[in-house]
Image (cartoon, rainbow, N blue to C red; front, side):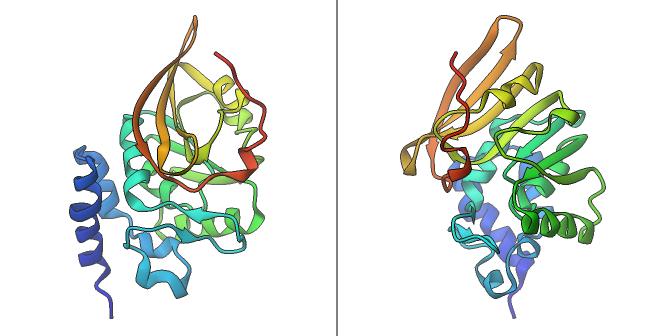
Length: 219
């Protein structure tokens, strides 16, 4: 039988820290949240392996490997009083991590099954400051806006304008822009004069096909 706590600790040491994740709050959140809860039962033996895992109900959606997810979350510099939008949350793993760092989290998924699974998983872990709602990924959650932080859990070519519109002034959006391992982690910060963009590192997350032809934002 797999010792998941031991596997989780090994993941933090051999994947997260070796990839440059050192923020103590982020590492503690990843240690606290059991990734195996968010993985299909037949894949739980691979829950802490450095690889993407297929999400239930879709041949085109995957849970990202732990390290790039952690790096994006660390890049967002989430504060305890932040309200966060988690885009394309899958079965809710990233949402659970963020919930340990933020005041509250709104997560969106466009697939009914994923929405239900994510909410069930969050409830199983008694995470009360996060909720998953059904919405097109490109539309965000305008009724819950504005957000201090928006994180997109997958690679895309451009960030939809609607998501920038839902950022609070001074808020930041992080996403992987591009395809494959050459995708670049970007931080966008909203001010009264527009959106400032800063590139950070290259990483891989599965592409979000739903956002491939989303309305683009030019700055």
